[in-house]
Length: 170
Image (spheres, rainbow, N blue to C red):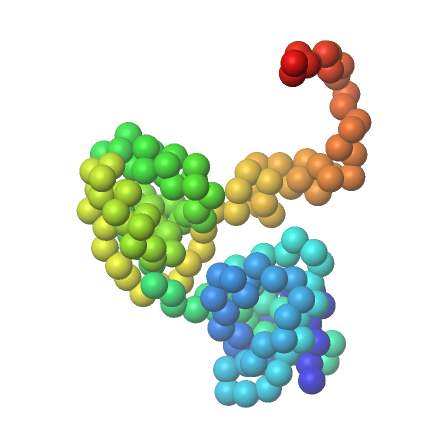
């Protein structure tokens, strides 16, 4: 069985294809089946999220191309950017993973969320497509990689001072 431990710089050729939905692409350790057969044990650093087009390097020196699988998505479109922002806010407030593109927001299909988006004033359509949601402000390639990497390590250390005198409940 092949093992993949790291992402590779894009090689000139790949030796296999691995099609994964978004849930699988968020895992850092898993067993998968390549297109055409063959197993691959993926063991990436914790916090790794695979994206469509990433290439995994195996212990045999081969390269496996990652492709995002098509999933059922709900798509809310509008030319009204304020309305789209309101919809994104309400979906984000429910911790819904969102793919944000010009004139639309996409999320995994959910009839309850679709009804909420319609109440906010947008029409929602379903489509089968790869899902590539925003990674968040601290995700790889996001606002500040370094801050997220160290956030859990030094939770009590701050370069600034502030009061910890909080009102006590009575």
